Length: 112
Length: 118
Image 1 (cartoon, rainbow over the protein chains, first blue to last red):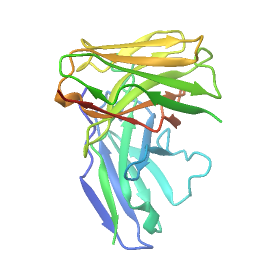
Image 2 (image 1 turned 90 degrees about the vertical axis):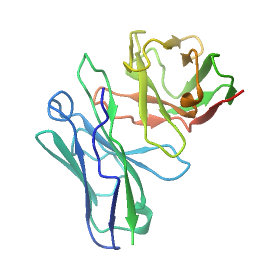
Image 3 (image 1 turned 90 degrees about the horizontal axis):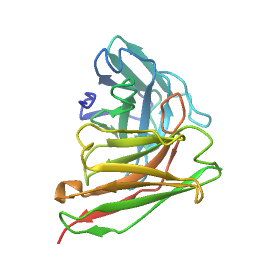
Image 4 (image 1 turned 30 degrees about the vertical axis):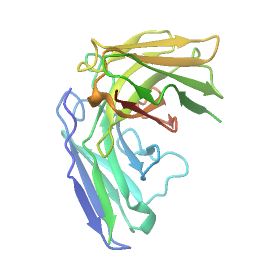
């Protein structure tokens, strides 16, 4: 049950966009449309920002968007704001034999 | 409003058993969904520990399976985690969580730090 691969860091200036990748395998990311993205500020519990690859929970700004191509999912944050600086983790359902979960390695997003 | 709250010792000795409970309010654990545990070592990423279905069926991370047990207590509307033979590597913030059938974690507990040390 290997972790999904994310870049350790990403950055952008206020107003710019940043995209984070999340690479898995055909057994998780590529096999199911159950990819989620979480935002975690220091000392806080994570918060879901995207689920089912591209859906936003109520209350999440539309600046956050998700997509998937093959075994790689992506999170894009447009119009970066200072409060977007946080750690971001992806996750994927891994099927009944690997149920139910694998997380990504995490990406620190810095707003310059 | 669904709320989850972890409780248990903050300090456990090496080789002993870590036991945590997650009290749930605003939703019945026996009604539906998966209920899970996640941990995060200091300064590191999230690790899935396992889940228990509302029916009581469990699934555990393969790397922890030999040491983990999860259970439901429907009378108290809570679920529990037991991790035996702990070492310093089990030091982490432990979160309990709820997963609907779309497999995102929609509700998290606030997390509780468990330190393994003599």
